[in-house]
Length: 280
Image (tube, rainbow, N blue to C red; front, side):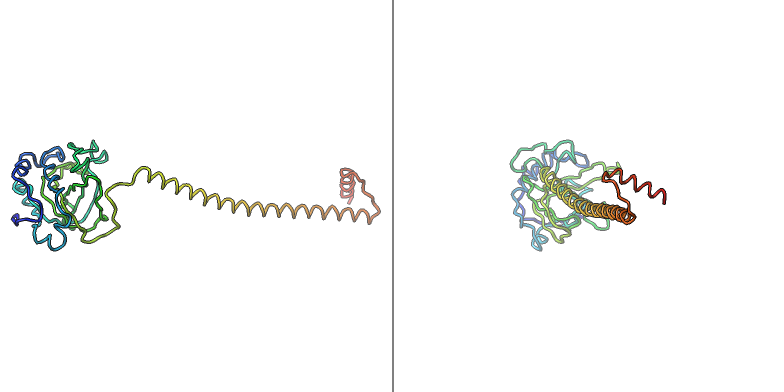
């Protein structure tokens, strides 16, 4: 059963707005931003104050959602304000070419909502991942701070429609969709970030810095290893040279002691020494 609690904190919808919302919205289809009702709620959300539903004061003025009632009679709940609690599963901008076949709302360009909205996917029951809803925020300049995944949040939002799409397994899944006016983090799980994705320029700059750093480290290690190796090789060659000179000098001394005089020509001297060794 839906709780009918008067709500005074949020700007009221006019009779014209409610009529447009009722006439310009259909349920259980895959249409999300093509219908007039969405833009009625986005315009209304743009006039909310961020603290209207913060803390205990918010819980006192907005009822919790009754999802079974939404599914049974969405038209009766459409446009009403609810205080939703859940755990953040995903946050992104909608639409983009990553999640749609275009990157702008059908009625893009209006300064009230810009070209895209910020979309939060919330799990409202920790024990039931299927208890998932979507909240669309009027955030034309993508300035919302998004909490970390699995953070517990509280959102004040108006019910928009039931949106049915094909899930990953190919089976249709129906999301209750809300248009949010205010949100607060109840329990933060990870560091927050803006709803903007890192720019291509930022990613490229970071990649260049990482590659340059890795190159310098590798070059330093190779130079260090090459320097040590070169020093060892020079030492070995020097030891061989000294050993060769020692033996040559010893041969000369032995020849002089035996009364032998070696020719001054190096080649001839070596020939004499070779013949002496053959005789020995």
